[in-house]
Image (cartoon, rainbow, N blue to C red; front, side, top):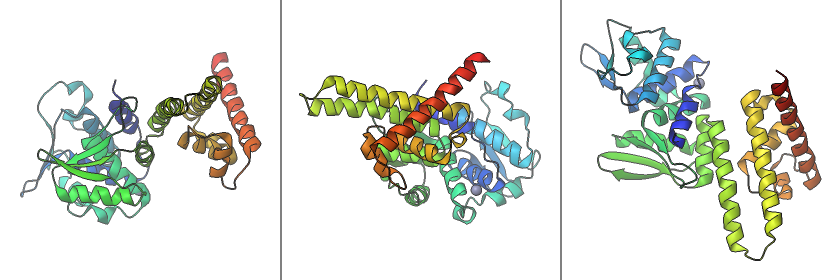
Length: 302
Ligand SMILES: [Zn+2]
């Protein structure tokens, strides 16, 4: 499976509890993926060649408007005809009014909704490269106004994407590994963000070995193994019980470690608020490891 597909699978499972966020995400899915026929008889078509977007539309429409159309049933995914929403199978007028497709910013007042909108746009028309091969994240759109909107929304989260034109598409893209990690975090793909961080450690260390040929190889590989083990522990905690299960100071430590996989203990300490020294960082990371170890043991005894 590709990394892009993994990220999308993670995002499909993320279903916002709040109505406003679901509507924001649907608005992006409709705008970047569905085909909306406006005329007096309104209809919306969902092609079947983007199963991630189709599945997410299905889940969100069902949860928000209680819509279950035959076409959305998963066992019909092999069929080629697009799924259709119209005045007969739902209150299409109301849905289109809620989604505010012509002026999406009107429904994107809250940060949670801005994230949801970007998530919908990525599921609809996005791609992210496997971090072991190179760093590239993009969202395509058929309309320059949509590209401008994405750029604006990303900039509110301190991410500045670039823009290019490929065939008939406008491409909003990000190239730097740290910015891509930020993007994944904004979208809510935390597990994938951690995978990217892990790939980055390996790459960074390889580079630093190349830079400092005469440095102590044994120390480097020790540092990498320790960092990978910490990342593995944090991933496990996140997967089994969520990072919120950690006390606040450990949760902060875990997040800082994930964001700076290549940093030394003293550097990590400077990213904490308030800052702590090397031994404080060591202490917290050890606590996190113990926490993960307990979860591992619990899992074994079940
Ligand atoms: Zn919201």
